[in-house]
Image: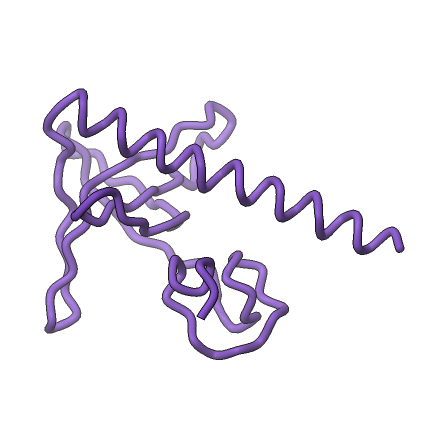
Length: 121
């Protein structure tokens, strides 16, 4: 299984998916989160990714996307299929998570550039 397929939890084997995993079978996954002030925000799940021994999730708010804000949380998934979003507690942990997420974005941009080059041939 490719790294992207592992990142997106895909194992279908198709290569035409728009979600980044390469499979072609996924719709955009949406979740609603409640912020500390009680505001509910619908977000697209960008990625679930590991940093050291923990998993993290990157969420893109569906409204007001022009500011480019992404929410990053710890992510704990349980055997029964439920999950929990966890606050990132320290500056050091946050720096490591943002660095890993930036690397995912950089890789996605490179993959997109390579795909564009192949389309020109």
